[in-house]
Image (tube, rainbow, N blue to C red; front, side, top):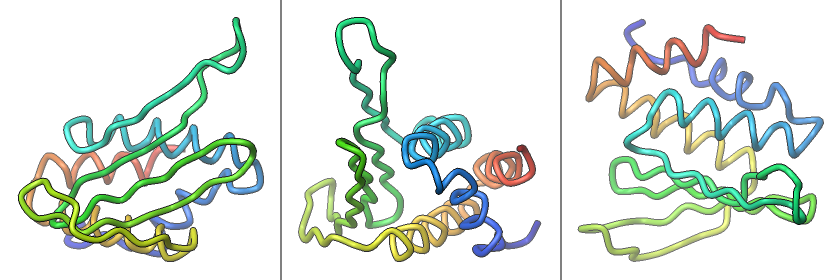
Length: 127
């Protein structure tokens, strides 16, 4: 696969979009498996004995940090510009714009690294 099909990636990431909790968890698991060094996922237990739910997904790629914050049945998606690990500017994006930025960041990473490209291919092919 010479370049990632961003529409296919976005469709894959939206597959569980009707159930927000499942969408966020599925996205976190897929990104953790495909990009273990680039993605950080924070989870918090719901209640005393409840299962752990994703609260935050962050991907640092190129000069960007893409974050998804989840809680109370809603998500917030943000994009921050980075320089030397320091956040210069953060903006809130709608989910579609964030997914498009995520797809572009993943495509850029796949061009830089054969291992990343192979991991992303597995992410797209698996279901």
